Amino acid sequence: MTKRRSRGDGGLHWDERRQRWIATASLGYRPDGKRITKRGSGKTKTEAKAKLKEIIRDYEDGLLISSTGYTVADAVQNWLEFGLSGRGSSTVSKCTTLANTHVIPDVGARKLVDLTADDIDLWLADKAKSLSTRTLRELRSILVRSISRAQAREKVKRNVVLLCEIPRGQEGRPSKSLALDQAEAVLKASEGTALHAYIVLSLLLGVRTEELRALTWSHVDLDGNPPSIMVWRSVREGNDTKTRKSRRTLAMPRRCADALKLHCERQEVARKAAGDGWQDNDLVFASKLGTELDAHNVRRSFRAVLKKAGLNAKEWTPREMRHSFVSLLSDSGVPLENISRLVGHRNTSVTETVYRKQLRPVLLEGAEAMDVIFKDS
Image 1 (cartoon, rainbow, N blue to C red):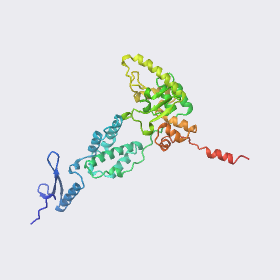
Image 2 (image 1 turned 60 degrees about the vertical axis):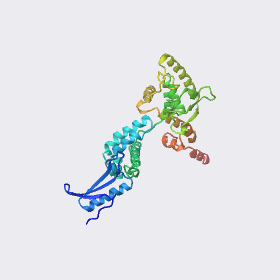
Image 3 (image 1 turned 90 degrees about the vertical axis):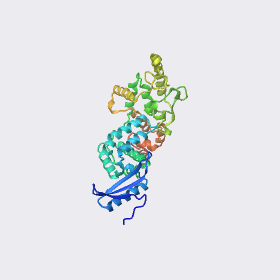
């Protein structure tokens, strides 16, 4: 007589219609009171018994049975909906676009429990043919975070994406810096435009465009000795600066102070012209109604200035004025440590890595010293 299986060990029975042995395990109850049941099958009783053991082992390891139909797309959509709480709207938009363009269409249909590191390696290698390394890093990050969230909710036992390296992608457009004559041409072309003070502060102080757009008059001291601005805010979520070291107070060159004084007079004219429509947000760089400048508007005005300066507007972006600031200081011999503090980087390695093509390429000290040591006979 066949021995009855113990309670909790599941059951095996023969399905005449399917001509297969069926393994059934009851694994508790859902929040709505319905029983959680998992089934497996095999051509032989031994195969079905092995399936049953696997089901029970996975359950004991913390893998919920309901997760077997849970796909990568389900995990990513869940993360997009609940895992980005508190992030800025631009971050949410970027992650959503990347997920809907590259992740979900390519690997979304794959069941999460069946996803392997080889699947991700092949996918990333294929994406590396057309995307930059930075974009590949962001795609991998989306998958890592999505699966980690699913793992925390017992949808899957491990995060296989953590086993995968990021391949080298396509080279993006390298950042550039203006030469001194080009910078002077841009400053000259900006005179008389609404963006003049913005460009002067970008080039002569190295302030991020996101920090300038959030700058308020209460953080500007034009009467100090020397005049200064407090870079304490940005248009990022929560108005925080990018890093703690980005929060800094900078003395202004005379040219910056003069540009801001002129800008203040022009803004007063705009305020009177707007009348009751003016929104007093205390912003230094604002629209004709006092509202925050949009990044697209800044780029459009910046391109007009570049065109007037005789440069190809399509080849430059406002953030490259900051690169130019670093380049010009480096070429004039300012130590890297000082430049790093001025631009608000966490350390000098960030400055050197991001702006390595702009930093002084020729080290002169050794050659100059040897010329002194080995004087021409």
